[in-house]
Length: 470
Image (cartoon, rainbow, N blue to C red; front, side, top):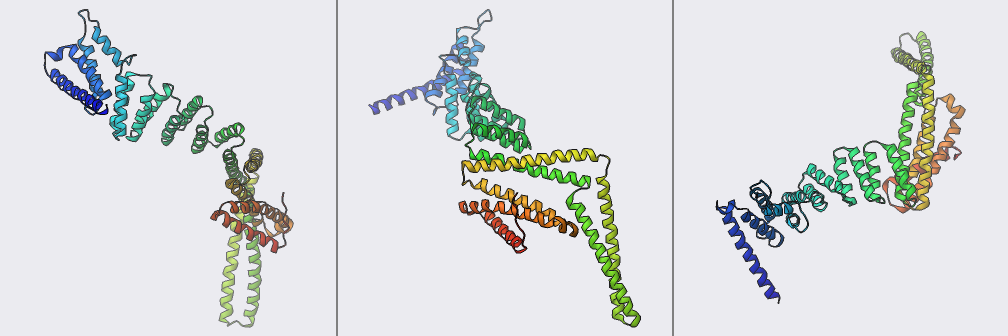
């Protein structure tokens, strides 16, 4: 039976070849080619080849399409109206029920796609859409073929048609958003993902990509809002919790930078002003020492006026004294400038802005801590949450330590020990998170940071600093 079926199939294919040869010959004959019937037979025959015997002509559907168009051109009544064949051809070209030209294009498009002829496949899928303008299947594969053929704009056009015609596949909306994102068209990428979510309300990948695009476009606040919504909908997603905490953390770092910039503008930056004042005091101390040394050497020179060595020493110390005087003048000018900024006319507005930023920083800092801890409640062994929370407290300690480093002697004697105790306490807070992180993952960053942290705590212990956790 199988042998008999193969023989029948072969006979039918041979007949299709003969019909094709006859049709090609008729088209070359001026008499037969002027008849609509010739073109109708050709259209149906090539359509059949496309559907069943594509090995005879892998682009038969295109020939069928052109033949149907020729029927419409030739089959016109004396009144200028479409004839019966013309109406049938129009039905085929419009993909009406009972016609197969659309299927012929899709089939041959798929075959070209499978043979890696992406340009040819794209053409077939585009022609299928000409026949069925509400189609999603050909638009989907047309978009994929265009991407494979490095025709980005065409791929976008095809995927947009898919979406406009009601396609629901979430991966298409995700891919289309990526194409827009690659061109920095962030608004279009976001709107595409939102359209995808309308079709797939619970899709986590689409929602997460909205967050990523907001971040890529520098819109951290919208990213935070999206993640807050994701966390509210799925409080058990540890990854969303960690990502939200990281965003709070990063926003806090940014706000801290804004605070420092404003403080410098106001002339109240603890770092710059304190450093200038400290340097001024150091130069004054040097001047006092050098002037004392000049008096001592001058006294010895009276007793030994011919001593070349004492003359050399006096010259060196005198130069050092002059350098100290220049340093004093320099740092006095810096301190004066900073103090003038501190007394500027817009001081009230700056202080109001500083207060707002400080409040924002405090709230964001607490939000980051709270969400990291929520993530650890969901998954106590989450490496990212442990490591990032450890880094949070570690950086917090480093930031506070700058205050101590920038203190002059008088300030350190007044409050230095108390601030050092708080610094130590923050390093202590970071320690257990790094210890747990290292047990979970053998990561060099975590191990190195933990080693540095332990050394710092040992130094505090050696100085007799009492650690205070706030």
